[in-house]
Length: 173
View 1 (cartoon, one colour):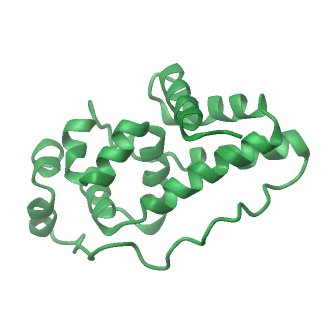
View 2 (tube, helix red, strand yellow; view 1 turned 180 degrees about the horizontal axis):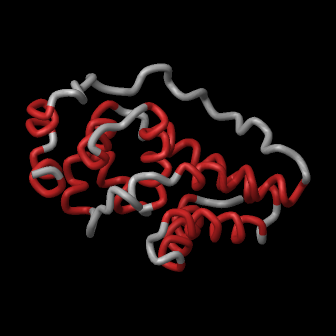
């Protein structure tokens, strides 16, 4: 049974070994998960999916819109996977207050960062390699239909700058 600490150790170890490159981190994660038993891969997938769903919030979507200069549904999904890949401190800090990402992120390269869709599929790929089967239903509640919290006008620079003053000043000004 994989616990939360082991989950974050896998995330942190692969990010460090990939030197922060999201694509390399995804590849390394598949490799490491393939070294585990199928039940551990399922546990990892449950931890990942639970955090992915917790991050389905308007305020995080707004922060993604600031960092990425706009964020579609798909871009926000890839951003949430990337955010998990940044590790527990950054992830939990962003959930506490998305504007804190201005301090939590050492840097942010719009070309490389904020997009790690493949990380969200690492467990699927590892499970399939180990068993020859698709990842079964994880038994988690479905993602909410609407993000949690109050919507933000992503089209309004003024609204984004007002809601995320630190992120706006550091990454958009």
